[in-house]
Image (cartoon, rainbow, N blue to C red; front, side, top):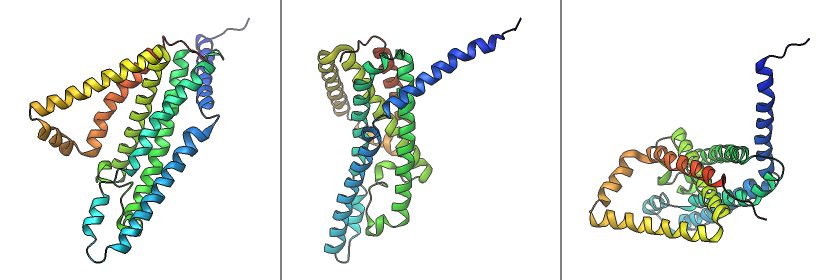
Length: 257
């Protein structure tokens, strides 16, 4: 008679669960154009437009171009890619969730696989943008004094700190977009109306609070004290809240084609 160890009986279900989680990742990557190529193309087009602007400024401004160069440090051109990733996350949830459940994937496995995808893509894009930032820094702004990947919002603390900032931003927008998508999956249009209304009221209340208590200088001081990497570290907190909220809402969501 062959003895079966307890560990071997537990390994098979765990291995199957791991396979299903990776299958969810593969499901999202069935069409890589949405989550990989399209954002890269958009980022390249934004860079091309900015490069043309820098070239025009370099030609048109004669001797004193210091102010123009300093002005490019406040460029928000690269921030669009982060906002776009929230749209990608929302599309990923709404499109693949009903399909995945049809293949006997649990909601937990689906959300773990989707979260794993977000982490991997965030890491990949963060590394890519950190490399571009290093090149931008080494070439003096691509030879024209421009700033896109080294904008002031991404910090001036070095390459590793900037990599962390990029990674945190991508994670936040991925999980924020996913959480919004789960609200739609759970409550449809009524849920979206309630969500955006509540968000609008919250933002207005915060602006009113800071204005009437005259605490805007304190807010600015907080950002200046923490720096880009410190703010990025704090951003992990709402990212975790969005991730947990998205999972809790998705547990009761009903897929509809």
